[in-house]
Image 1 (spheres, rainbow, N blue to C red):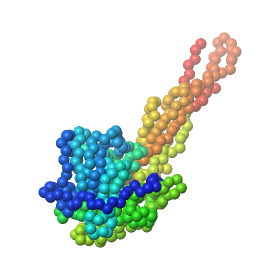
Image 2 (spheres, rainbow, N blue to C red):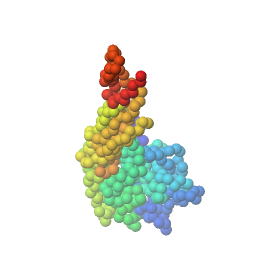
Image 3 (cartoon, one colour):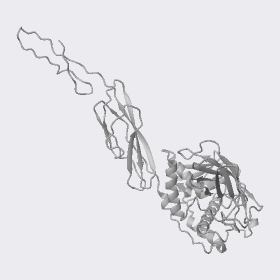
Image 4 (cartoon, rainbow, N blue to C red):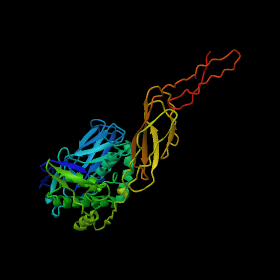
Length: 441
């Protein structure tokens, strides 16, 4: 079961003050407001990173950049920090040329689901200082959006990489699935303002804004069912997690998502929300702005691919000379697809010669000749047709090679000139290995 912790008090505060109008004119637009958005500039670094934070545009949010490890987690403190302007735009200078994790915290945005026609009177929601969204700036890019959908992208890639690492590859896979589902590049497309799109916004920017509006409507619907007048950040997180598997059903790949309300109370997300209906409802409620924007019909199929489960088999015990066969036959793909197999010895010497390391059931011959017991550890990694992976390990305990027992036969009495045959046939090896013989007079 997936649980989202929540404080008793609302973490989002509804404000009744206006924030961030349509922007200024005469500059190239990052996002469609009632006019183009000016990107704030900085000059104290070699690489300039720009973008826009939006659910609707998030004003006054702190923005931090982090270098990341192979699991997608920050390596250390932020390498650059800044703040979004009234239109949600930001620009940061940084010396790093690596992939950078983008993280916002705090800020204020307009609730897109509010049906108040006067923009100045629409609900404003304020995020707490520890509440915000994630995105990623690739090493070869300099611009990125930060939205609930980029947050879904980063967090799912982190989840896929949590076991085996390889965040960069997992990120590319998840991004391709999300892009396929949405119909545009979720990272490089800067969304139009859902509550006040600019007339010059592109088709992709308008589609992005429509998805953000549909997400807001779904949030509002779910929040009301949970007894909240406005979405808390915990609900935003929970709904984003729910949507990240392609199906807004209150579950993440079959596991119920629960919001904890203290020690004695919890809330389960509703399972009766149709995201496509929420998209259509937002478009209909804002038809003047989105009449020329095609209503998307995401199926969720691309994102519904769950990672496989690796099973390296049961631990075994073997002796010198034995043939050991490993087994990944219990590994499974939830979609019933074909898996590829990769076995590797991860224990230290002695190294074995693994036959068929890319098959379901490789084997090796025990040739340690060790007088002490040892354990070989093997790791199985399975990969599904999308590229998601899972790993498992198995231990093969090798018994110590006990010394053989020599038996020179019975004592004999012979006469001079008799032919004498000695016999070591009763000598034995505990592991039944072949013995070599040497007789001395």
